[in-house]
Image 1: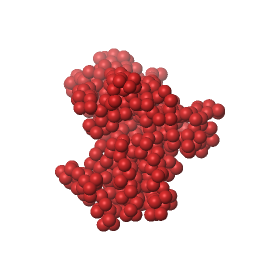
Image 2: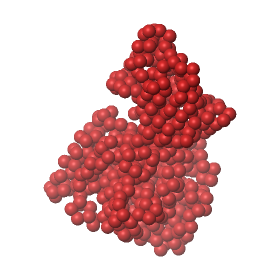
Image 3: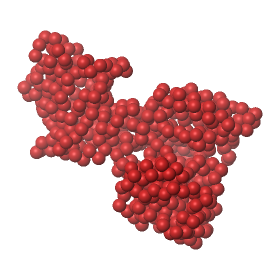
Image 4: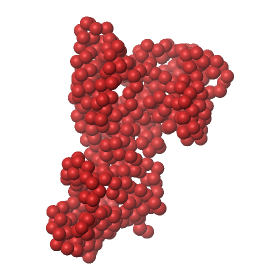
Length: 536
């Protein structure tokens, strides 16, 4: 499938190209105006690059019959016409875009007849809104839920890249009334939502396609579509700035884009690289919640995953639909989720309000493609987090009095030649709590993906102590290697770090085996415990 990504060097276009670059069924071309950026990305991904100004060069280019599908990511789409889609129709090229603008997405069906005649698919909104939100709603409906009301909010992390064009698009609509939603204005109707793994964040109403589309396609009476900024000072500040527009005293905040972008950049370090989505459904039979958390700066991949999934389906010949439609009914939730699993993104999702059902598991997200190199027992344990595993272990204690005092302080297990061990796992919001019980003592820790940490690292917390651990995997053996330490959030120098030697392997019986030794400089070994665990 010869695929051109228009705007392929941008925030979302670049991520879409990274998702598609290694698919043997897709011949990818990165298209954009900046020659240096096009050449750099094409070289990085090993794909073709094309320098073009789509407003002037597109008709000539598509007439050459070089492409089968075009993905339009050269937003913002507010105020854009359908010239790119119309050019694709004229030349028999499938068209997708990542627009989330209500007017643009909901109006795409005006091209339906000509797209059908040309035998092409023209699909708008192959992004978070409305492709992902609609796929979640369809799964709830398919599982028998009657849905009358939907409420969702997209809450990116403060580290998420935001170019001037995106900020201008947000400010251009802030404060203006939302059509067909009496009393609601863009960046009004403030709400406080809780996303597992992120905590409570602000949300405000936005002019997204879902309220109109969900009412037309699924009979949903009311839909709240919102978004939020992580920092309260930015979110509430924009809400206040939009007030003159809501009152009709000011036409638009767009002229303030440059100074506001400067302020936002100065505050970037005060947020995180974690974003998410929460969507709630209500009906006569009760309510359900689905959530997503994206960590490690992988949040901007989320809007690109529906488009990637749809391009793959086109390449496999699995999309028979032709005509011009919003991106609803073309993708299942499982197909979209498979994109972030395949790309080893640090994104987890699931049903429920506490994130206990989030998948993929923490270690799958941390290790990515290296997860398959773990032992069979290790993979089963980490994928089964949320239960109790038990087994046997031997424990070697401290060799001196100082070590015994420290070991007692941290409830480390006493020496034993053959002791029972139980490990309870609890998953909440993408984090795992491990409670290890040996010899009448319990060691409790929490493992998670840390803020602004590289791939292949986890953070393990024991009370106020936090340890950065690299987790390399070699020939079925996973090691935990000290890479940093903090106390109460304060970074500690290396001479304060404990000496940790920890490894996970498997055995011939498929059991999970562990060997952990912890010591301190100047004191020596505090504990070494090794043995096996089996699941339920």
